[in-house]
Image 1 (cartoon, rainbow, N blue to C red):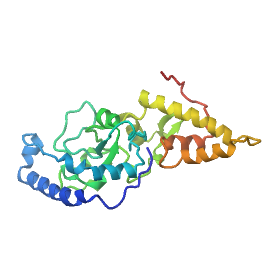
Image 2: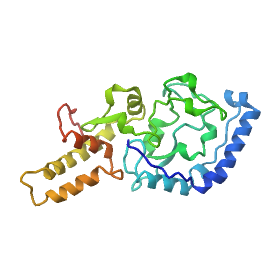
Image 3: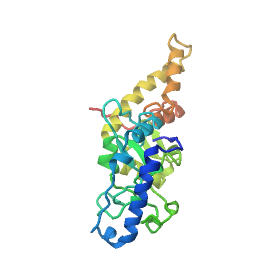
Length: 262
């Protein structure tokens, strides 16, 4: 996970249709708040607005074709999802909890609340999860101030994930065991086996590139290796956060977990 710089200007469909839908949802809640809290009434969200191609395309472009959570490139093999950072329909603090309603219905079409993700991160891990450091500060309706919340999950559009998460070789670790890094890694599946296998492969390839880039005396391929290494830490590179940490440690494998790829 790395910092994401989203365009300030939202796609027109969000500023026009999305804004109108937000007003309608907020008015509906105000008229029957208890019914929505009990689940007697549920909101009907229009995925053709928040999931519109102009929205999805702009998110994918801003994220360089990568999932905002795991940094995997997905556009060549999957459509990906438009994910809500704060879940729209209901929320859970832990995966086994009962779904609490309503969710952040007023943010369903909010540009700042939308990201592009791979299906695994979204549908298997993130889903309706949104834990807070202090549950008493949770915004539960459109009149509440979400700025009072202290999310456990790192929002890469508002803060730099690399201040919370680093890597020991290919394994993500919370810096100094901070709770936000820990929650983001564990609850969003950043340490899942399949993802680690892919990162191990990428790490080992780049470690060879690094060795060639610093070779003394320089080899005929050294300049090419240095150029590849420069590209590997750019925002548009897959697993850039891991490779930046690896370069910082000179690709040291001290303390690395045993690679058990299948």
